[in-house]
Length: 237
Image (cartoon, rainbow, N blue to C red; front, side):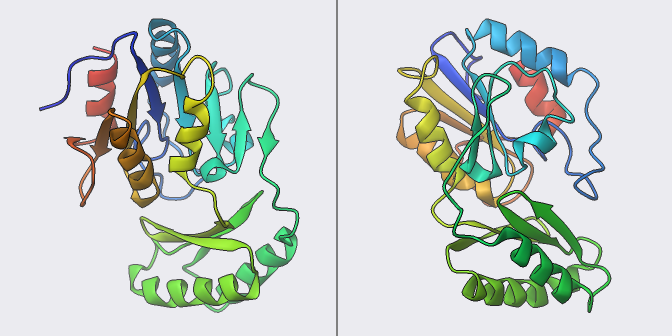
C-alpha cells in the first residue's frame, strides 16, 4: 500500500532512469513516457515549485529529455546543481584529471567489447549489461582506477559501476535542496529505483518523510511500486 497523496506540505525528489522512465539499454536510448513532461509541470504547480530531479546523469544530458522542466535538478549524484533552469553550479573536483580518467576507462574496455564506457563531466561509468558475466572484471578494474585517480569514489548500480568525485551522493543532494526555498520546512518524498538512491531514501525517511522504491530489490524504503508507470499513476492520479 502506498502513502496518502502528495500535499502542499511535501517536497518531491525524483530519480530519472528507472523511476520516471524505464532503464534504457544504453544511456542514450531513453524511451521517455509521452506524458512525463506535462506531468512534471502539473506536479510543480501543485506543490508550489517544490519538485526536484536528483539524477546520476549530467544535467546537460538530462536536459536533452526534459528541456522545459521548471524545477531544480541535481546532477552527477549531487556534483552539479541547477536551480533556475540555466545556471549549473558544480563541486570543486578540479584535482581530478577527467580526460585522463576517460582515457584509462577506454583503454581497459578495449579488451572487452561488450563493455560500454559512458563519459561524464565529473566521472566515468562502465556498463556491462551486454554481458553480465563481466561484473567482477568491471568492479576490479574500477577499484584499480579509483586507486589510480585519488579523489574519486565508487558507485555500483544496475549492471554498471561509476567513478565520481568522492564525497558526493544523492543523500547530500537532498540535504542541500532541503535547505533552500521552496523545499525548506516541507516533508520530503523521494522515489528511486537503484543503489545510488538508497542513501537518499534513508535520508528522506530520517527527516520524517517518505521513500518509495521503484521495482524489485532490497531497499530501505517503506513503500514500493512495480515500475515507473505505477509511480506516475500515484503521483498524478
